[in-house]
Image (cartoon, rainbow, N blue to C red; front, side, top):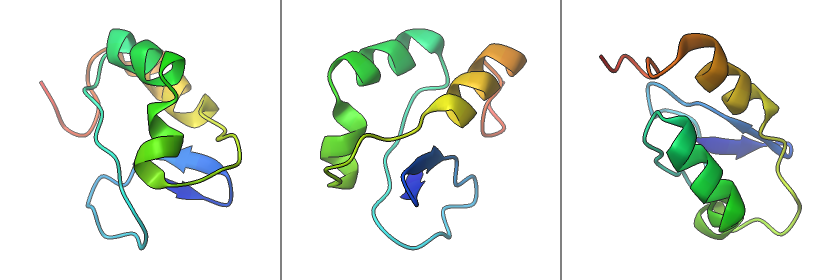
Length: 69
């Protein structure tokens, strides 16, 4: 994942510029990362990140994210 204009987005091919962060494709890991504010630390950003895109994908596809099985 990367931050682009304050939005946390999935970089499936790991080709986007900037710092990236990894996340297990589960809602539990997403909840823990949000609770610990891990994305802002990992991506070294100070502004809050919009995580709706990631959360919708986790909720919409279950555990299948980034080609996982």
